[in-house]
Image (cartoon, rainbow, N blue to C red):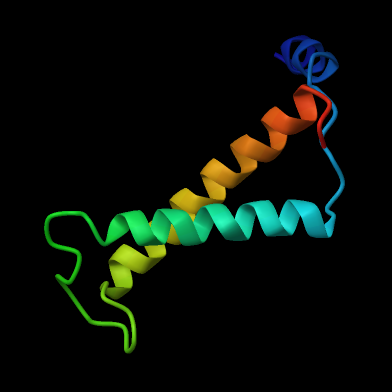
Length: 83
């Protein structure tokens, strides 16, 4: 099993160090996903957030998915050499 892990570690692409650009990309994708989450069928089921048209659970799920999408964008831009 150790040899499999070492073989997999040799194929890991370079990941970028954190920069303000990376933070901006992840923040923007999180906000976009949050705005899209207001279009789901019942975004206000559960405890409400003051000032936002979504519930606490919808907000947490949108932020988590926004980070996942943002990381994918950062890794994709790094892979093509744009970041």
